[in-house]
Length: 306
Image (cartoon, rainbow, N blue to C red; front, side, top):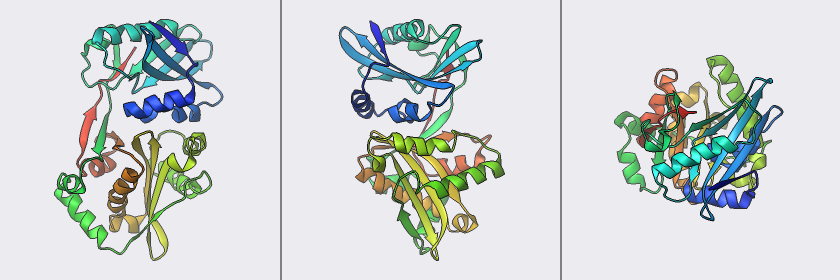
């Protein structure tokens, strides 16, 4: 077994990521978008018996001259079936070969749900995992609608009859500026944090096809924007990233209509899965109830390991 660091070309990475249905955090454009002064991206290609069996993308930061931390979120990306023992060896090999200055820590938040999974038996769990909601877009609309909470489904029906106009915005860094300003304002108002707002612009620019990197839908009432959603697209998966609504948008349940219409648009782009992002009923009860009410499958990951 050996590991190639930062030698894999983008077309190879993108093709493997798409085929595996990889998470946003393992997408090439994600790593490129977070590379700013003081932050680097390391990409590992794991070779076993002459074949590539896994990929792993790390976001790395050096804290003074004290410690280097490399974080692999929702990775490695496994490309072929491997036994837990082989996966455990891969984690250890990655840690030993990581090209970061010492002292250093390699942190993994893998896409497993059992913290006692044999593949992480040689690692130490340092943090519990977070939950997300996954929507299978390959299922018919009738099934998706039937799995919604009754109140969610009824409010969607009301939104469909409200006369709202939905607009599919042209995606480019300039066109999304208005939504990013609204996002910045609501973050300040509600005191919540996330990836830097500028990340969206960099992500769109980093895409091989700008129009395929994101989907922005907004709802209008009397020619006035009242709500919007932004989804980031990575291979065969899309991730919900930003939602904004004013009072009129909330009163008309505009977000429910936007999300429902987004299903068809994403399908038409070849998207099979929608990742609705974190579900945290303690810190973000409102948005979490919104997500949970639409059905889907809640997945709670095992946590972070070192």
